[in-house]
Length: 438
Image (tube, rainbow, N blue to C red; front, side):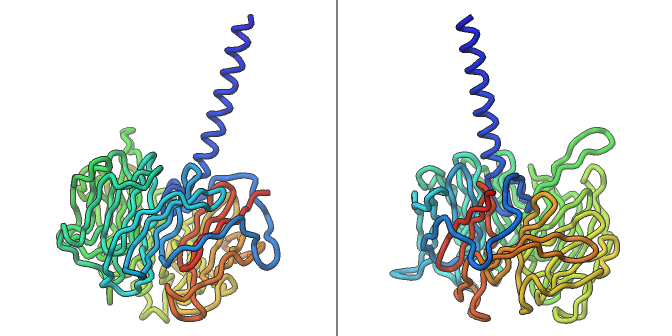
C-alpha cells in the first residue's frame, strides 16, 4: 500500500514537472520571431494595460550596437553586438534571463565593408545545446549554449565567393531537422544548408542575389495524406519554395528588384497563402497547392515609387496576414489594412509610429491582440480589424539610439523577444527586460 502511494505521488510529481517544463519551453523565444518563427506569443497571464510613462525594468545591462533582436531559451538571453575599441569585434553575448548577469561572451575580429555599420543583423538561433550565430560579414558560428565554446564555424566571406548585399548578411539561421539553413549571399547559390552538428555543407540552391529575409518552413498535406515540408525563401530576385532536405526548387515567383534587393520582413503565412512586401517593389500574394509543391500568383501591387505606393511597400517590419486582411507598415510609417484578395487599401492610420522614411513597427500576436514595438522605443497593445487600428494602451520601454540610424534622435529597429511573461529589447547601448506578468 505504501509503495503504491509512493509510486502515485512520484507519478504526480513527474506529470507536474512535465507540464511545468512544457510551459517554460512554450514561453521561450528560441529564434527570430519566436519558437515557430511566426510572430505569435503563446502565453496566458500577461497584463491587459500598461503603466503611464516608462515601463518598469527588471534589469538593464550595457551592450554594444547591433540590429539583431534578442532570443531567450532555458533561462538565458542571447544577443549579438559590435564594438570598435580597441579593435573591431563582433560578439555573441549570453545573459541570465532572471538577473541580467553575463554568463559568457564569444568575440572575434571582423572588418566591416558594408553600409550601416551598427553591428550584426541576424538573431541567434537556439537548438537544444547549440546556438547558431551569423555575423554581418558572414561569420557563421555554432556555439555551446552553456559555455559559448565554438563547436564549428565558417567564414563565408573567405570560404566562398560572396555577392555581399550592401547591408551585409541579415537573415537569421533556420534549424530544420539535422540542418541549419542560411541565406548566405554565396555567388552561385544564395541559400546554403550545413549539417547542424558538424558544419559540413549539405546543399546549395538558388543562384540569385540575396536579400535580408529569414527563411521559414511550412508543412502541407496533399489529398493523398502525405505531408510535405516546404522551405520558403524570399531572395533578392524571387519568392521560392524548396525541399529543405535537398534544396530542390518546387516553385518560384520572380520578384526582381527595380533598384536593389531590399526584402527584409519575413514571408507571412495564413492557410495556403504567403505574403511579402518590399520598400521599392510593393507587395505580392501567392497561394500554395494543398501539398505545397506548387503555387500560383494571386496578385502583385507596385506603386510608382516608395513615396507614392499602392497596396503596401513595407521596409523592416513583418506584416500580418489574417484571414481576409493584411496589416502592415508602409514606407513612411503609415499603418495600413489591405484586402487580402486584391491588395486594395481599406484604411490607413498614423498613430502607432511618427511619420518618417523607414519608420518601423515590429508586431507580435498574442490571443486576440497585437503587441507593437515601434522605432521610438514604445510598447503598444493593440487590436486590428477591418474597421481600424485600436490602440488599447502604450508605454515607453527603451530609449532610441543613433548608431543604427543617426536621424530623428535615433531609432530602435531591433525586434524584441517575448518570453517568460516579459519583453526583452535592445538598443545600441542596452539590453533590458520588463515584466508583463499580471
